Every structure is written in C-alpha cells, then in structure tokens.
Length: 333
Ligand code: NAI
Ligand code: MG
Image (cartoon, rainbow, N blue to C red; front, side, top):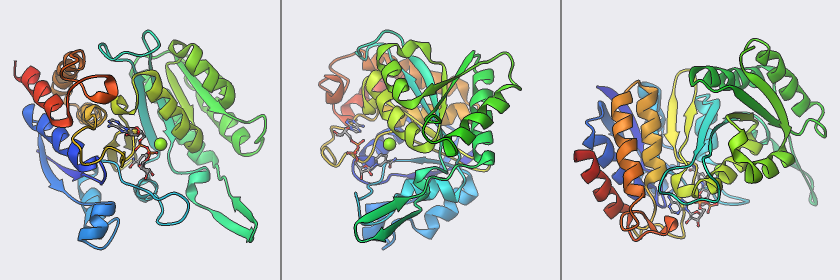
C-alpha cells in the first residue's frame, strides 16, 4: 500500500473527488488515503487556504490527487496551484489531449500530449506597479528550467513510442526569453536523433490545433502558452469535463484535471467527474498499476458512449453520481 494525499479542493472539487475515490476503490487501488483540505473550504474550516498539514502530507507521501481550487481574479490570494507547483518543484505539467470514443467532437482522432513548463514564466508572480497607471510583470525563463522540460518531453516521446515533438514559442518577438527556451530545447533534442523536433510559433499553433490537430504527438511549451493551449486542447476533444492532467516533479507528483472549480455548477451534482477520474488513471499508470488503469479506461469509454449515463456537458442525461454508478457497474461486469 502507498500513501496518497487526497485534496478535494472547493467548488465542484469535493463532488468529483468523492466519485473518483469510489472508482479507485472499485479497482482495489493500492492506496492508504489521507484526506486534506485546501482552498476556500480550508479557509473556512482551518483558517488557511493551504494548511501546513496538507503540505506536510504531500511532503511525506510524494503523491497527491487534487480537485480544483478557486483563485480570485485581480486582487485576493495567489493561486494555490501555482504555489503547490513551485513548492514541490512540480516542473512538468502533463496534459493529454485525446479524443474518446463516444464523446462527440469536431475532429477525428486526436491524440497528443501537452508538456507545459510549470514553474517559470509570467506565473512566478513577479509584478509591480511602476506608478498608479503602469503595471509590470516579469517573464523569467532559465536555461536549466528549459532544459529539464525539454528533456521531459523528449523522454516522454521516447518512452511512449511517439516520433515527433513540437516546441511552441514566440521567439520572433521575445528574442531573449523565448529565444533561450527554443535554443535550449533544440540543443537537448540533438540527443534524441530518432525524434523529429520542430518548432511552431504560438499564434500559428492555435490555428494548427483547430485545423489539423492530428499532426501533433508531443507539444512542449512554456507556462502561459501551455495553460492556454491546454484549454484549447480540451475544447478539441469534448471540453474541460474530459481533460486530465498531472504535475510531475523529481520528488512528488500531483494529479489534477485541467478544469477549475466551476462555481457556476458547484453543488448541483452536474459536474463531469471524467477529467478527475482520468487523472486517477494517469496516477495508476505513474505508479505502474497498468492493469487497474486499463480496467478503468475501458469501463470509462463504454460509459461515455451511453447518452443516459454521460453528463450534461457532453449532451447526456447523467449526473455526477449516476455517471459514476454506471461506470462502477461496467467495472464490476
Ligand atoms: P472552469 O474550468 O472552472 O470552468 C469553465 C467552464 O467549464 C464553466 O462553464 C464550467 O461549468 C465548465 N466546467 C469545468 N469543469 C467542468 C466539469 N468537470 N464538468 C462540467 N463542466 C465543467 O474555469 P473558470 O470558470 O475560468 O474558473 C473557475 C475557478 O477555477 C477560478 O477561480 C479559477 O482560478 C479556478 N481554476 C482552478 C484550477 C485548479 O485548481 N487546477 C484550474 C483552472 C481554474
Ligand atoms: Mg488553466
């Protein structure tokens, strides 16, 4: 048994986390679950957004699965996710963009992985008011940060038998920061001669993703571009309800869906738990529990094909809990 930190988060987080745990338990996943709060619920109950006990738990287990947490726009607290990613140096944000049979989308088969650098770029929060009418944000890119994310993406391609990596940047305009990122990635790629390495400027990338998404296999990019492109990727394959992710570091890994806390549907048993359940599948793969991960995926694909089972975001008639009931039936049969 391995200890797993479970962070339900807030908004739709607790609802989808409860269903995701039912699924892990149904396949007898080898975990001792340690539940810890974070986000608005933690603020109400413990008086802190990210309690010390939650951080200590991740520190000890090195493995967590997390529901979304709300971050206020403009003022207010910093994003907990950004804090967690920096604290545990979860430098690789891995976000598969894969069409699922049964989930309608505009394109045929789409199957690529976005590898987003997770610790640098404009998300470091280095901002200041120069004067009352002028604000500045600093974009920081380092050679070492660029090197390790490029290596992660190329290793992932090699490990999963993918033949191509596309590096997304805007080095034509940001010649120093994006220039360093691109040059470093190109250097790393020379050590992977069997992988075709190409670069794509981010605005063109948006167009390519919606016109011919099947041309991509692995995409490596910086923090901000990766954040935006992964929601675009989710839109290609059925929406945020089906887009999973993982934040991977040397000593810890935190699995979470791409979507946020969806306050517009929170507490209504409407949210699609698929994205978080797929994040749990990634977690099982990460620890080498391939059989169990496949058992969930097979059942998930066939449940999603059923309009009575799947949730409203996918045009279905199911709820968060009834979808999971149907999924558990399939796992058992
Ligand atoms: P969002 O992803 O929460 O919602 C965008 C739209 O997608 C909404 O219409 C929502 O109802 C829908 N949606 C999202 N997940 C869904 C699901 N599982 N099933 C069905 N529909 C779903 O993005 P938004 O509204 O921009 O952000 C809300 C809050 O979440 C913000 O405070 C934001 O900072 C936070 N956030 C947190 C993240 C995290 O904890 N990892 C990631 C992204 C945003
Ligand atoms: Mg995002």
